[in-house]
Image (cartoon, rainbow, N blue to C red):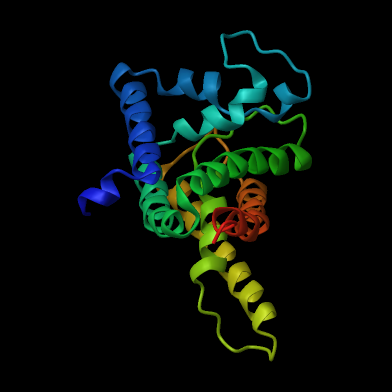
Length: 210
């Protein structure tokens, strides 16, 4: 990785996420941090918890700083850095930040929609990363000629990429043994859709004066 890559917002986000995980792991408070910072749909529906926790409206974002284990963390960040650096070259720093935030909240919204009273905390940056992957799939995907429509082929390619991402996440969750937290398929879909919907708008915004 060259010096310019190290100055990117993608690497900065990854660095903050690593530091947050290390702090929780070293202090031995990983479980408590998951409860305090994880996204719990029931809290957004008005439920109260008997422990100190981040404000419910912030937990879609704080949940991205909490991971179920080192494998969960490294896999998410490997994919994020790989796709994020490429997306950042096209959409810029602001574009990556918008995608990450929108992905985090889009993932939480999707998870809340399917289980508004769920009390299992959802943790991890997967939803936010999903938005970056969605933007990446439209920016760099090379779809196969399945139909005569190039646009339809691009969307088919995006759906296949989403399916592969979800399967890999489920496998990582199983291997990491993240019992008691959500490895949430709706969240991945919500984040991915946010990335798909924002990609063109962010592209047009960045090159609005070109």
